[in-house]
Image 1: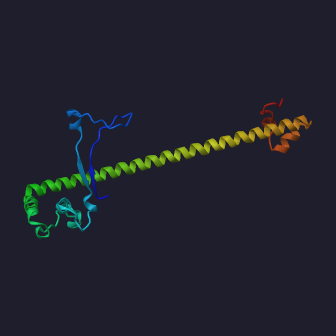
Image 2: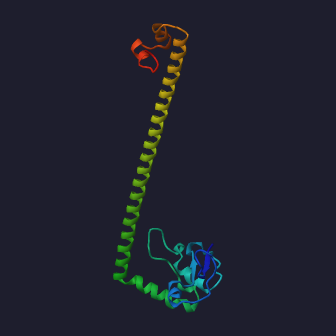
Image 3: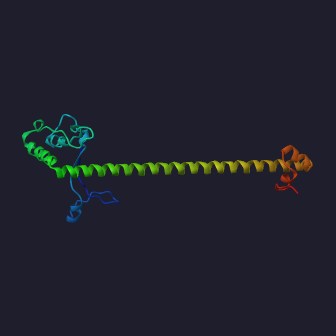
Length: 186
């Protein structure tokens, strides 16, 4: 959506009913507004506001150059004083220096944000790997415990059938000491 008009309504938080009673304090907290996404403006401007704001369209600037290339003849006469004022401002060295500092600051800020995002991504990846390793370890322990229980049940069954411990140990690939380490084997 290119343009949104914003009106405020005061609602009761729990009943969701609109409160008609006016209060100067509450009224001062809210205001009506119009939100316009300048990059989404089409070439066909629908009203004066869109036409005025098209002065700031980023398509009017050269790549890697912060100063926009706006021709005042492309706009109605009533907007030309605004365009001239903006063009005069960019001619002043102090303003250009400020713009350069702002651009440098924004560039550093973007780099910093990118480093933070990369560090966060790496941290999340490390946590994901740690969690995966923990799950694999738990699964291996669960399998070991399951195998132990199965061997224990097999030992108990074979003992109940009267097989000697040495034979059971040989069939299950265990030493006699390992066999005697299972519950129920004496």
